[in-house]
Image (cartoon, rainbow, N blue to C red; front, side):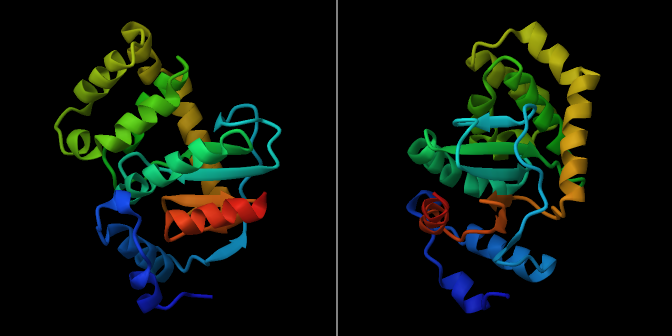
Length: 215
């Protein structure tokens, strides 16, 4: 069932969004231009050994996100997910899956940077830097310079980081997740699954409620 536009625009935006209507407008666009339901059964596979996760492997509840580092709406949701990881990270498994969009020129290369950092145990740290500085690198002519600076800030082995970014195995991993997402019905980013249901919360409070109810 589609939610009225007035209700979506009236939703309170969390303080960290700085009063911006971007998140609310994103929800409107996703609902009305993709036909996404407020809640529907998910076809996404359960978290596996190859997934990038945060939290206990045997958690009762999993929050799965299909995301694109160049997607501005994903960047708006990133602080929300961070707050949830901090609050529920000992009871909920958070799963990040790559879904780079073709219309974003740096979507795939930023995913490669994140995966290369993951191979050195610093995925979530790189994840945060990519979203926090999205406007910086996405508007540049050479995002690699920025990715290198983030990797250096995290103390990564730079030779290995650059080699892993360019490795065929990295490209294959990202493509595999994106293909699996398409088969699961993912049509946009961000795409969230909570307790085996596709959801699109409008606020941190709504997201928190969904997780609490699932627990």
